[in-house]
Picture 1 (cartoon, rainbow, N blue to C red):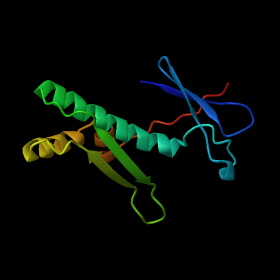
Picture 2 (cartoon, rainbow, N blue to C red):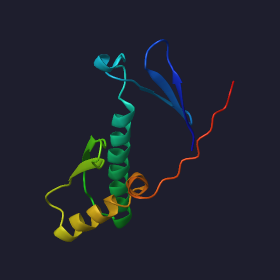
Picture 3 (spheres, rainbow, N blue to C red):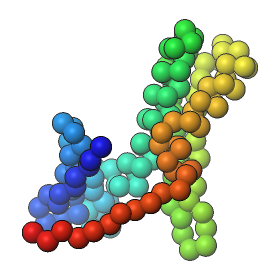
Picture 4 (cartoon, rainbow, N blue to C red):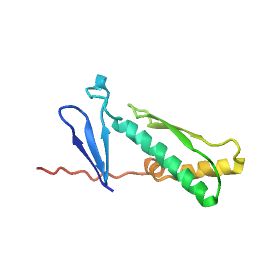
Length: 131
């Protein structure tokens, strides 16, 4: 999977292409952006929230569990000097679900690909290409 970001004009706004999809990332006005899209860090929180929700819904569907709508909130606090990066995640599930189902869905939530990536070791292969 490849994502490409290209600056849009003279601001910090960037158009992002991922496969056949396009989105925009930007910075708030007080940071020099035009606030025309989420910040890259907000996109990271959105990736975790959406991946968690989709993973839960796919698992429930395979089990034949009717869980209705799933809502996942992620509050992301980037690392600052000497502090850890923090993700506070709240998963809203129907109260009618059995305790065993809720526990299992939360176990499954922690196995979504984005969650596993953020928990694990990451290796960067960085290079400069001159044009």
